[in-house]
Image (cartoon, rainbow, N blue to C red; front, top):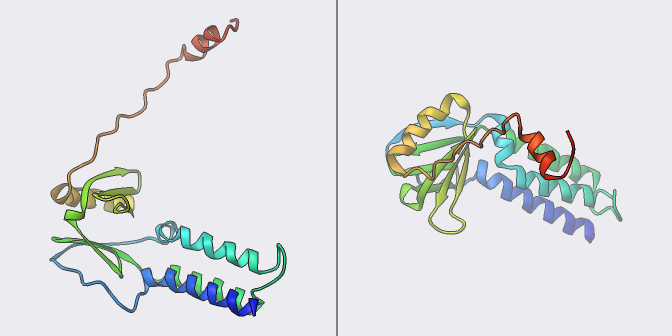
Length: 182
C-alpha cells in the first residue's frame, strides 16, 4: 500500500513539473511577438530547481536510505529519467506587445508588473500583488534586448548603488576600534 501511495506522490510531482514545460494546455498568448528568448539548459535547471529538489528529496526518503523503502527501484529510475526528459525539452520566453509568456502554461500582461530590475543573468519583474513577481533567467547575449523591451513596457525599479570599496586603511581602523595593536 505504501509503495502505491509513494508512486502516486512521485507521479503527481512529476506531472506538476512537466505542466510548466510541456503542458498539454497552452496559455493563449496575446499581442504581437517581439522577442523569443530560448532558455539554456542551466537556466532551465535553475527555473525548475524547487521541483527538482522536492522530487529528489522524495526519492531519497522513499528509496530506503532513511527508514523503510516505499519507492521501488523501477519507479526511482523512471522518475529520474522523466525529470531529465522534462529538463531537456526546449523552452523559451516569449515577449509580446501585451505581456510575457515565461512558459507554455502561463501568460502575464505588462499591467501585472510595477517594476523590474536586472542583476547579473536574472531579471526580476516585481508584481503588484504579493506573489506576482517573476524571475527570468536571461543569457548575456539576450540581456540587452530584453532590458530595452522591458524599459518600454514596465517602469524600472530602484537603482542600486554598487557597494563601496573598503579603503586600504580599513583593517587598521578596525583593529584600533577593537583595541588591537599595530
